Length: 427
Ligand code: HEC
Ligand code: HEC
Image 1 (tube, rainbow, N blue to C red):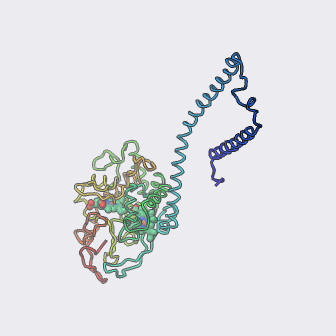
Image 2 (image 1 turned 90 degrees about the vertical axis):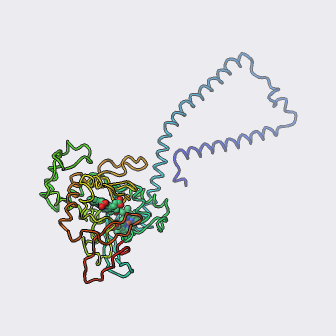
Image 3 (image 1 turned 135 degrees about the vertical axis):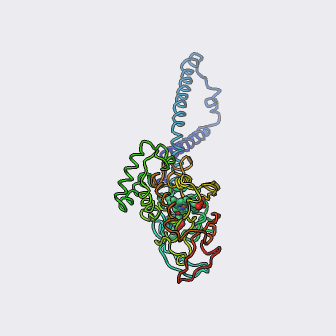
């Protein structure tokens, strides 16, 4: 306990000790004096003792009293503002202290209690989860390794409330379980909050994220990377707000159609870095999370938790789509022409926590630059050319915690038993 004592507390204890010891001596001397012989009150009683003369009372004695009062006043005048000045720092220190305690508790949950680390990696760098896929009857389909996305960027793509939603309810049909008691899990609301406090402590900077993606593009297609750098440089002065970027007229520098398709394809399926944290396919393409994008549903049983994007060009304009991918969706808010958001579509170009003063401010921007998002959008709008077989209304995706039901990929007949279509086939 003494090891934990602050300076202020130590001083407090010394003052209390002085007061107690002094008080004890005072009482003790009073008792001693009171024991004197009977009859001595003539000398002892204060009112019988001659006091100072008027002359002395009104000069030396009075001055002493006045000066000491003045001295006390100075002490008060100086210490009060000093105390007040230090109070801000003390409060900030107390808040920081609380924050650190919360993050420490979250770290314990992350590493030990819930073992998030086992799947998402140390400090959320991403990892894999071994998982048994079953069909709608609970029958074994296959044993797979499912990518667990990096969490060191998760608060750059989801608002804190949206991350809380994932932690509370999990992602049914994936290895990500519901952790909140409200979703049937083991962690209380406070523990979920503490876990999020810990997630905040290891979020990457925007530069680190952009660098990670650049490195991946460079190694996949060096020439294309050089072109991207060129286009970025040409836009650097012009582009004030990343949301203004578009390639429908000649306002901004753009990659060619072919380059956009190439870059879009790289980014949509990007599994490294971050175990797919930057990719779209892990949610939108069945089988992508287990390294088998577009695998027949019969073989993977389930695997898409977001709308089929093949044919998206018929549902929304290119600018609406760009806007959605940059900002992500918000619960209850409309996106595109008439779709209703659930908050489960991440925002890749704009920090969704920006301006929420209750959370750390990481800065503007996001995980992908506007030129990259544009390329992704161009690629997605071309998917119906690339995969006409996967297009069209097929199996109904069972809504996941209220996500609007969507059409999923039809199941091509294979030798494996094909799950009957209808609700419950995919989750
Ligand atoms: C058994 C492995 C496993 C454990 C344990 C686990 N997760 Fe997950 N988590 C996953 C997988 C796999 C996904 C991706 C699911 C998908 O494909 O949509 C995921 C998704 C997430 C997401 C959504 C990220 C995104 O961008 O889609 C968050 C946030 C998350 N997990 C946080 C946690 C936290 C915090 C814990 C500990 C309380 C935890 N997870 C424990 C495997 C796990
Ligand atoms: C964590 C899962 C996840 C990831 C990763 C993800 N999305 Fe989505 N996306 C969704 C969900 C869920 C929706 C449905 C909207 C909602 O629920 O708010 C959606 C909706 C969309 C839509 C609108 C589809 C429609 O028919 O309404 C587009 C376009 C889209 N996403 C593009 C992308 C792109 C591009 C990326 C990658 C840069 C991406 N998504 C990454 C989950 C995801």
